[in-house]
Amino acid sequence: MLGYIWRMDMEAPVDEPIRFNRLRRKIYVYHFRHSGLNFFSRTKWGVFPKAYDWDMLRAEYCSVYGPMGTGGLAQFVNLAVVDPGTGKVIDRLLFAHGRLKGEMYWAMAQLYMQQGPEAVPKFDRPPRDWNNEVHFENIARRFAPKVKWPEAMDLESRTPP
Picture: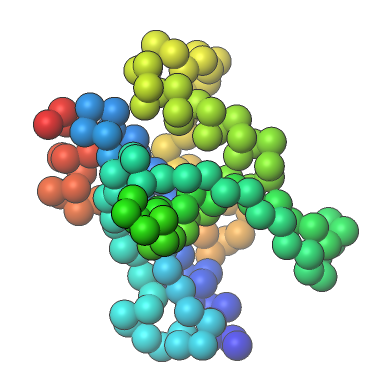
């Protein structure tokens, strides 16, 4: 158990960003996987960047009861990657904590992918760059690995086809 906690603190990346490329109709996910049963495994732990077609995505709401300080109910919005032919879920990705925040983010993602950046509301502050953030509550997060996309995926996710 101590090995799992230590590894989660030291190996989890600073952030798990999602990039939306409207012109390619793809999303790019910086996905961190971990396993509570195999915490010494190199294949079940780590960052696995993936690309998915936009048409394969569905938003799902789920709530889980558990022993937590917030009363026991945790709400999440996940992105389900669905095989278009069979409807079988290939992968699930955490999109947002909280139902209302997840609905808002999903609506903005749909607006962006359908109408472009002009349709998304303007924000007062620029988005955070977690790689440059220094004020973490957890001291171990200061030493967490920075987000580094593979070069080919970084280029593909930022350019038109």
